[in-house]
Length: 209
Image 1: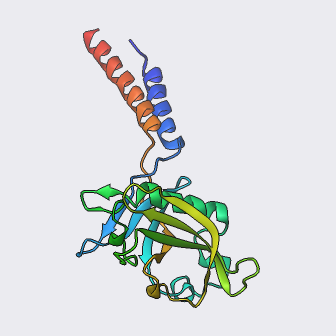
Image 2: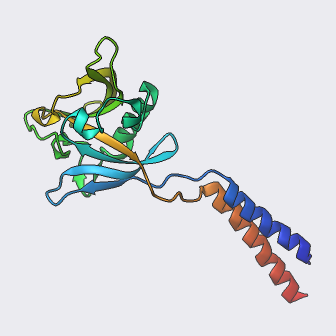
Image 3: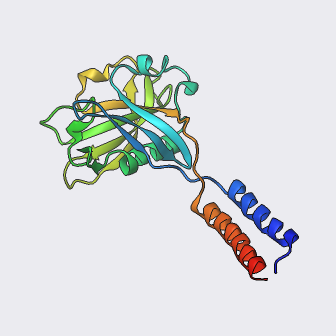
């Protein structure tokens, strides 16, 4: 029969593993308006951190709080901005029961020109572009229609005062840190389960004894 001390150690170890392992990101939740347009998403995993994203027309100055300092943007270098763009392609621009958002880029807010076959989600990451101090540096997640290959393009740039409403192919992707709680990683849940199973076995042996 397992001693009380051993049972306590099993449970304590499982709980410690459960608390200590890194949390896994929950799946992104697509945001769709009443007309079936994709307006953004919650809980988008970018490098292990969760972000909410909103697709917004307007100027960089208006959408990103002045567009004049790196702190105006969720990502402040090209590498992180490209990771955010890839996250959009992998987790947000998808064909789902809510809408064919990968196959039909016109279903994304801000990209409603039915004559064209893609939508660029523009992600600014620096308040000035090399050689263009009046422009913000950007990357773009291009969501191609049908069987065309999606991709992240850049570095590019956008004039800070240019209104994306005038461009039916581009829309800003505004990221903010998500307030969603992390969920336990599968490994942690498995270890907790093993600890609880050990306690159950100990209980059965004690009853039989």
